[in-house]
Length: 308
Ligand code: F6P
Image 1 (cartoon, rainbow, N blue to C red):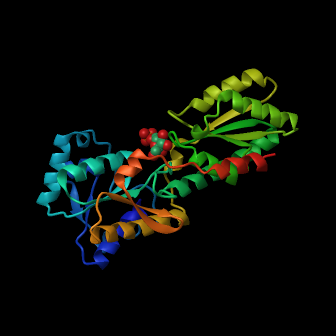
Image 2: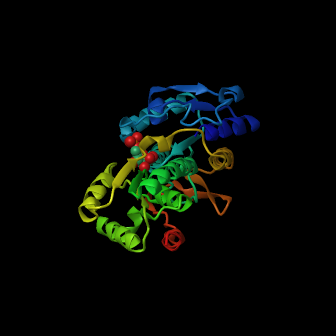
Image 3: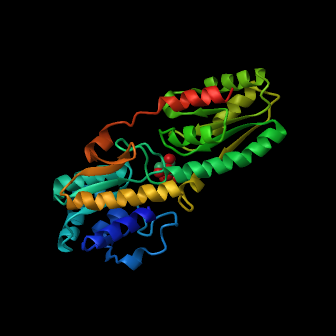
């Protein structure tokens, strides 16, 4: 997100537009935690994870009253356009805000889950996949040496994007994806099949689904059926949401930051900027909330064939 903030600030300055940072997201919009940003304000942040503007959950913004307060704050500061980086929660708030307040809003997709309709990739996703990949490479040493079965649980509430890509890149035996509706029994049978094929160890990447920890229950179930196998679980958790961004993420964030400012200049409103087939795209914010991104079928086929 920092790479994106940097791009928004510097592009605005390039076009002689005054640019302000709203701290703590919608909370800062309500409380008026808004500061002008200069080119030097965003020096040396490109390589840092997180967001210099900080982030906060804001229940007040979910109410008409809260959004009215935020609207009044922006109007008092003579702010004429808003750029919001985030996922579907951020975009739901942004859409309601635009409809009630009329200040043009442009969304930028920023979530490690990569589950936003209207863009091939979201900011943070590639970095998260690389973090998981690093972990899988390390876990593989124990899995191989000890002949164990490992369930590696990764983030992605309702989304298997991190799981499938890290599984393919890490040469895992399988990935358990919410989109595919794979059951615990399917996974256990698949491992049994691998054992019959004389695989000495297995790494299965499991998307966390509704809440973290599901892989522990899966491991318990698997242990009952695979009594003579050592089974271990690694839950990667929030390490996936931090650290220095990958080159791909820095470039994506920079492109989207520039595109968002230019969208505001072009008079676009209530849209999200994304990247489709390596080109900047614009989709109505409403679509990003209502439509589901189609899952890449090829990838599930790939893992099945290559893990033989
Ligand atoms: O950003 C989305 C996400 O990474 C999900 O994959 C995950 O379930 C969630 O955030 C966890 O967020 P937190 O624990 O901070 O609420």
